[in-house]
Amino acid sequence: MKLSALLLVACFAGTAFAEPEVDEDRPTAHRARVPLTMLEQLSLIIPPMAYYWSTTDVQAVDFDMDWDWGSWKRKLTSADAYILDTNDWESNATRHPLAGYLAYQIGRANGFAPLGSVGMALGTSALWEYLVEYKELISVNDLVVNTGSAFAIGEPLFQLGRLADERGARWTRQGLGLLTSPYHRVHAWHGYSSWGPRGPRWAQLEAALGAATGSHDEGTWSDARVALDLELVTDRRYGRPGSSVARFGPGSWNRVVADVRVAADAPSTFRFATQTTFAGRYTREIDDTGSGTDWFLGTATGADYLSQRLASEWDSTFVMHLLGPRLALGHWRDGYRVTWELAGYADLGMTDAHVFGPEPAFPPEPLFNVLQVRGYYYAAGLSIATRLRADTPRWTAELEGRAFQLWSIDGLDRVEMNGSDLDPHDVSDQRAFARGALGARVSRDLRLELAIEAALRRGTWQQRERVTTELASTASLVMPF
Image (cartoon, rainbow, N blue to C red; front, side, top):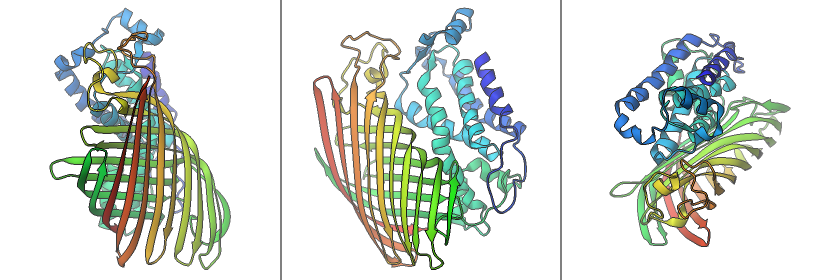
């Protein structure tokens, strides 16, 4: 309880006068607003809290503690009160990142800087773990996911939402603002925004509608596809004529990708990925005709969620890119733009154990660990991503790849079995994805794009190994907005 209170006090006290966002139009309209922030944070916590305490018959399986001195002493002074919980995938990999993103965006919408807004996500998560779920052991995964997702997901979506602040923003960008940054958009509509209006920033926003067909190890499939690829650089010097060296701060270079695919009978794929910068240096040498080069070198973060229906199972992975270097090189020439990006990350996340396939590998009772009960595990790992893209007035071309190496985090199970047959330690997974696309403009605001995609999945445990592959092609109409 003391820890939770201190987290909340530090969060608000340390950011009550958050530094304003750098904006060349005019300074912020208000300082950070603590009372409204606290009210909105409460509105975020109270509904799920009411649900939690109205379903104690469902939650009781996790009740290992009580409101007594022995329980609180264990929570506050002993590391054995911290576990990796056995909750389902939807709760841990979907609802908790969403909660972290919303708590973060409340802070940003009310004028707080990124660090203070991350503190809010941590503080609200700690309050939930210690006070709302006081009968449960502390879920380390919930604290980490809520806090890690806050900036990695919340900041790029907040920056995209601010495109609606531009003078004369079209209805498509107004709608995008409501979707990606709802608290800020509602504040702005009521004339109570913490942030001033902004001029145009460099943005490449694209929506795609099309179809995909492919084959995997056990058959073929066909899907309809809806996708978004949203890229935004908030510094107005990016890509413009001039010679300079500039410092890019938090949230300066952002990308968000969403891809939803639906088969004849049900959804088949959902991917949501983000990327944003912590800090870096941007150098440009571009002449008055718009020709020249630029490059960026800095540190970045992000998140990558993929849930896909394979032949006889779902394969799901959620990776938080904690920190890593990012390099981007650009060449500009009279309407032509070629960029190459390379990034590597240290990761935490969750992934289905591909080695075991669709059949449960262990008896589901009693609840010892999440892999035994749910089929996925908590993981640490490394990843690498690269992208080469060329844009011209008539056509586009893109090559993109990403690869993940994940190892199970062992030793924090709900019940440690100390190496027994029900203690599946040392599980590992690899995922690799590649995509090549070529597009031709059919009108000013429309292009036809054809792409080939490939995937490799490999899982190992002890002497067991499982490898599956996938190859697909897509045809899409892509519309910038």
